Length: 320
Image 1 (tube, rainbow, N blue to C red):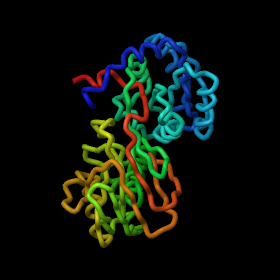
Image 2: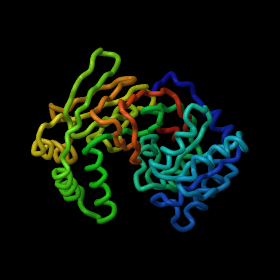
Image 3: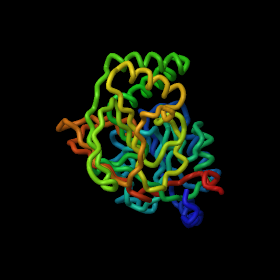
Image 4: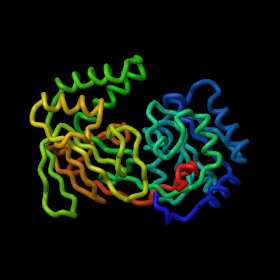
């Protein structure tokens, strides 16, 4: 991240002197397993010198409980235990408040926590959180709704979701799960007619593609939906789509991209922008934000909101 961001270790130290409220989403992947919540609380108390109160909640109640906390306990430090969907819900409330908060990876998918630099194992992540520092992190917006990882339309994100689901639930090898996901999408193949306007190059670019993915900052690893954003503070959106006019070309490109590197395909459209408008030939469209599905009116207006979230992050993640 930017080297000129001021060191905020003092802020993190001050947070440690206040009470932390650990919200555990009981419906997330590992949020309700055994005595995990109490183990996490013990680590934060002992290693972070925090007074920790644990609140177990269903995911749909989280936003309202965060609003109540903001009104009644403005000095407390919220820590959100859950997956990307849980963090997505929290970000709607924390966006633009300037209030520090933390996350712990307790979901099926924990892409955001991993991109922040946290370990995948919850207890190890809690140890990192106990000594974390506060850093300003960007958020993405679409029609005023916040996303922390990406927004996706069409087929490609569905393939990744099917692949990961088969790997985690059935223990299938990645290549086999991927082949099955591609086969499913082969029969569901649909083209999106997309009009893109970035406001920077001028004019509207028209594309026909089976998927469109808009990311909060840029991916650098092989899979566009895998963890791999080296920066979360560049103030840009990444745009990725693969124009294909027939299902056979899409099947080949999709399988190659999921096994190897989709960016090796010369047809892949990649760009970055601070804001963009996506026009579709539909009045309403389904969009997946951080793995959660929403309906939006078109056009879709995306923008990057720099430094909108103030998150506890592992100190080592930002060492030169």
